[in-house]
Every structure is written in structure tokens, then in C-alpha cells.
Length: 339
Image (tube, rainbow, N blue to C red; front, side, top):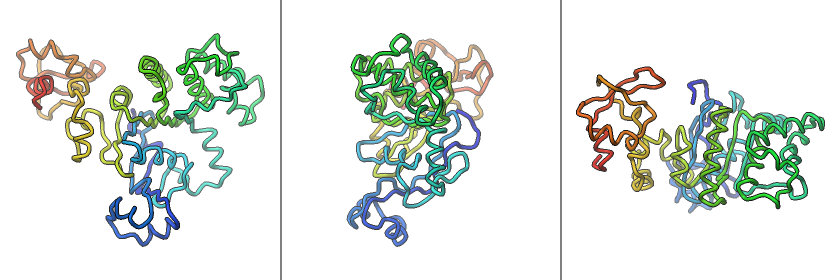
């Protein structure tokens, strides 16, 4: 994750479904609740959301079915036109783009992968991957070379001439990922891409996805309803309810400091020792001596050291540089579940 200007900036975004949503939004009383909006005959798919996606960040959006997470992502790409607010991509208000410019933006900057693989059954792996390049008008040789490159990237070398029916579910999902990568997108939208897969294949795909992200450094918005998956993948997690973002923060902060009662209940069964990292436990004003711990180490990773160590404070480093210190008692409280 980087600290550059956001690649996506959403401000006070509304997406209402109903007879005349724009007129209704203009007249709607401030602070009108989700239920009150529904009683008026409208559905708030997205309710006054302001959120940024940083360049190179993986933002995971979570929520129960109907919470608005897929609707929000479709607003980011203007597959849905928003009812109110603004969404900027690289500083450009996408709501003001002409249709041709919007198509160019999607073709050249955005990759999308959805739960349904959407592969063309009568085309081979290579032809499926090359399809968006064909739609872009690239010549046959150029698109074949690019398709071969991303097929190798996702680990499907040797299966270029297979048809989708000859592939496993995980392999089909890799084709979908390769197809979205073929256009070299800056922004990648993934809507529950692994939810239809068996647990073992799903874990393998998560590992593959993390490998690709480490290599490519894309800005990613990833939707899931699986908290374990979110914890593995996310730089930040946004938890949605009734179209609104209840909290958007790092996994550490969400499980340690839930902003609302809903978030607390959403995370109460999570093993905090497996989530909270040393970097998230740094306290201002603390200093420590002796062997440091790496900022990315979880409390579970540090368990043996925490039990045997007698230091009150433990220094924390990131990539070899000292960034602060944590309280051993804070970490122990999380380890034994008394935080």
C-alpha cells in the first residue's frame, strides 16, 4: 500500500433504486434511515459512502448479502450510475465521462473478475484470455503474445489449447483472472471470485492471488463474505451494512477497536491473536531493548517469545528499521483472550 493520491476517491455516494431516485434524494430529510427510505418505496443500495482506494492497495469490502458491497463496486466502475455524490478515478469524475470515454477507461484501466467465470465455452484458454485484446482491436500476433504471457503468469502453461469444459473450477478461475490481467489494468475489481471453489482450491487461489499482487502491485477492490479470506488478503477492510460503510480500517484496528456494535458482533468470533500484528500494537512513548520483532508478526507468531520473555516492552522493526515498541502485557492479553 502506498501514500500517493488515491486512485479511487468516492465522496458522499448514494445509489437509490426506485421510481425517481434523484428527485427523492434532493427532498430526502438529512439522516433518513435505511428503513425509512425503504418505507418510502426506495432501496438504498449505497448510502452516503465516502471512501478512498490508495494506489497499490488491496481494499477488501465485506458484508452480509444485500449490504451493498457489489453495488458499491459497480458504482466505482460506473456499471451503475450513482444517484448522488462523486466518484473520481485518477482525479477524473467518472460521472461526467461520455460513453466513449467511459468505455476507454474500462478497457484500458480496469480489470473485472466475478464469481461466475463467464468463459466462452467454444474458445480455448488462449482465445478466452486474448478476447478483451481482440475487442480492443489489437492485431492477432500482439494479442497472442500477451495472452501467452499472462497464461504463464497464472500457472496455466501447457493448457493454452484446452477448452473450459476440460478444466477444473480452480483452473477456470485462473483463466478469468488471466483474461482480466491481459489488458494490464491499473485497477482490479474482484467480486467474490473464489466463493464457488472448494476450500482447498480456494486456499490455493488465494496464495496465487497474493503472489500476483506482490509481483504486479495493482490497486484492488476485492469483495468477499469470508472474514478469513479478508484477513489473508486485505491492507484495509471496509465492513458494510444497509448500504453504508460501518468501518474501514486495517484488520488489526477493526478487531481491536470496532467502531460500531455491528462491527463488534461481526468480528467477535475472530481469533485476535491470529490477526493482530506487532506493528498494530506499537504504543507512543514506549521504547524497548534487545531482540526486536518484525512488524508483520502476528501475536500467534510471537507466542513462544511472549511466554518466555521477561521484558516489559519489546522493540518492533519494519524491514530492519526500528519503528517503535509494544507492551508485552498488551500482546499477552490478546494471546490468552483477555483483551
